[in-house]
Structure formats: structure tokens, C-alpha cells
Image: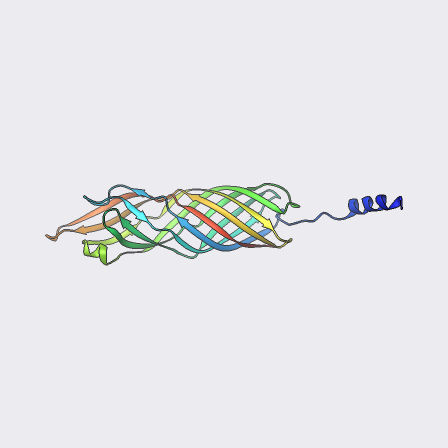
Length: 217
């Protein structure tokens, strides 16, 4: 009986440690729900109106990552197109616009390859492209036309955590902040038929919140 504790100790010492992956050479794929929440601000849109306001939107988010070391990784964020209602203070919604904000991140993962929880921080660059810009009946009724939104480059920051279910599957939650500054361009036509071109400096700077699952290979 006295030998039993010694046998258990030797067995525990020789047993392989559990590896939950997130180690050098791993590819990480994540998918889930991502909500973009703009923190918008702009110059006054037209005389007698306020600044732009932009609605939230939720889409399918996808990330593709690669572990350079056990603690350093890179990640590309993608998603299905986000569609936002655009309004003006004192008027209401006047337009819709779609956008895609792919972001390339460098990440640092805390813990090690045996850690079931892997929190991480990231920083990188965001490129946002806008398309399908269109005034609705309210905007057109106000004499507005020719809407366009310039694409944007900016800084992106990220924080997240993976919970590893086994060596392949994980649950993920993460948040991004993106620096998005753009110019919104359009034409207004008054009652006399006079046309004026406008360019309104606009800040979006959204937070994006994602919750989903991931697979490592």
C-alpha cells in the first residue's frame, strides 16, 4: 500500500499534458454574430438640420487567424455586408448605405498552449469600403441626390477571449474599435432648381461586438 502514492506520482509525472492548441503553426477560423455600433459625429448636414446619425446592424462575422508563435498571432476580420440607416437630426432617416470593414490585426495571446482560456489583445489596420448608397423617399423628397461615401483607412484595436472546448473547438467573444473617418458627398436642389454640391466630414468610429465559435487546425 505504501507504494501506491509513489506509483500515482510517477504516473502523473509521465502523463502528457493536455494541449488545447493555440500554438505555433495553428490556423484559427471563427464565425458568429457581429454587431457594428457606430459612434458617429459630423458637421451640420444642411442649414437648419443637425449632424448625421447611423443605425446599428448585425451580420455574420468571420475571422481567419494564424499563430506565428504560441503567443503571437495575426487575424483577418471579414463579414457579410452591413446595412445602415442614415438619418439627420430634425428630419429622420434619409438614406441607407452598406459597408464592409475588413481589418488585419497583430495579436498577443496570454497563457500558453495548455491554457483552456486564451484572452488576447490586438492592434492593426482597418479598411472600410462603402457601397449601395441611396437616398430614400424622405431624402429624395427633400431634394437630395447623388449620394456617395468615401472609403476609409484607419487604426483598429481589439480585445477578446477564446474558451477551448477541446483541441479543435472553441467559443469566442471579442470586441473591436475602428477609426473610420469619411466624407459624405451629395447634391441638394432647392425649390428654384438651384443645385449645390456638399461634402460633409463624418466620423463613425464604431465598436464591433462578436460572439461565436471557432475551429483550430
